[in-house]
Image (tube, rainbow, N blue to C red; front, side, top):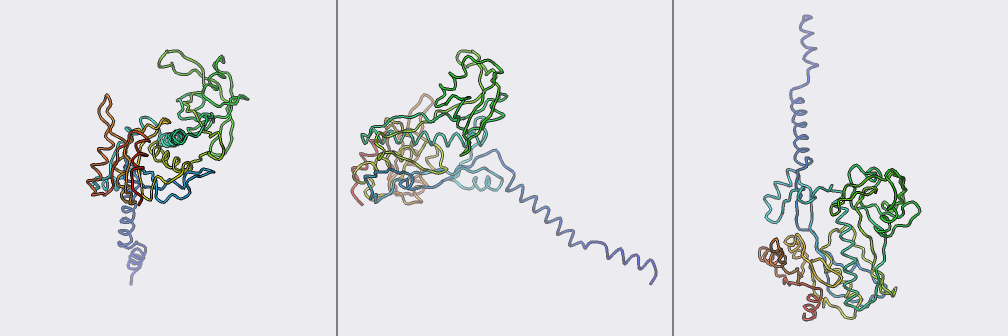
Length: 367
């Protein structure tokens, strides 16, 4: 054996096997492909059927008159997911999934801000549902200011560096803030550059931030400019029953949006009054509610029909179609169409008011 032979054998021994190279290359390609398919976001939201959940556990009344609810009043949700390549292709093949461009949904907001807005809208809906039920049950109540919530931040203004959407403003310097009027009147008369200390609640933590006042963009109506910190606000309110044993508390978790208003009002009314309006039936539904009991149209009703049907609902309350200057918003009609498509046996009932729903339930025979 020559020296060259030894050298050649040494070189062969050090060279990685071709199979090992192919395996590593294939693994890398697989990982990259997997990441692209599942983790590269697309500019779409996917809307699909969510859940149908009994409301009774979410509503608490100290002196619950009706303690034997034999049926269920259920709120219905729509599931929303971010699209990737795989879920996008799957949704194209699923006739009941719906794709919407994020920019059309968010309308300039971040996803975090949009989510926060939906949570606030849900709280407002709960407040209005309590008022509607109190009015129908003839229970005296009052509205109490609970502070203001940050719902938006103006780019380039002082608050952008310190606050977040969802923060609750508690004080401006030593001035307690219970309404947007309180904050505006406190700032009025101050000058650009004046310092102000904002005390706010983020989650369950109280925090403080000092910031200078800046000049806000011109008012859309008057064109005037004033100083401020650059936040959009929403009033936080609570509905207080005059009698503590009639005080309603709602704990709905992470559910957002206004569309459970009607069903919350029916559940609250059922707990506050004698008898059981469910009569043993499983009743789902959707629709916003005003304090006067008027039911408003909502989005995603076709997805909600599927969710309610899967949960075994026998009756579904759908807001009546609404004619507007820009056309008709179809809720009841769309609900009936989807129920036929999936061969559901649910009875779809159109309602324009809380009273319509109660009258229908009164006519139901016990199950």
